[in-house]
Image (cartoon, rainbow, N blue to C red; front, side, top):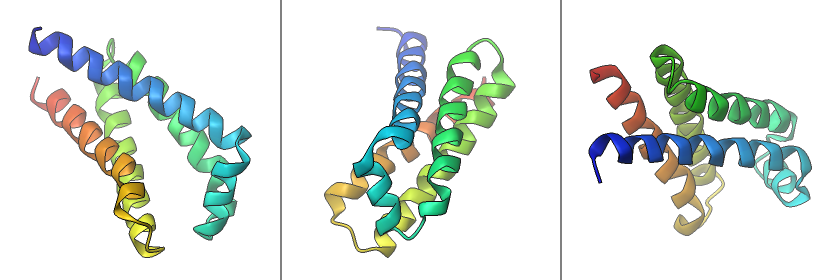
Amino acid sequence: MSSTLLYLILVVFSGVSFVIYGVLLFNSSKMKADFERFKLKKYTYLVGSLEILGGLGLIIGLAAELLLTLSSFGLAALMLLGVVTRIKVKDDFVLIIPALLFLLLNSFICYESLIK
């Protein structure tokens, strides 16, 4: 598998994941309860909207490099805040792993988009 194909797969995977997660934030009572637990209830729909827009930005950004860079940077920043939030509320490490992995993935996508 070429590195270009792997990069394409990672971008699409991240984009689709964020669109799905963002939509779930509007509909899932469990996810809304997490935001209440984080004391961030008023930001639930903002975060969901940013995740949907960022995910779409990654996918569309495959044809528009600047959009890809901005979207991946924004999603990495959002995931950094997610990691910090989960540490702040003393979540188990296993609950921090998804946000940490998406932070690393979107940081990688952003970096790769900048050096191309």
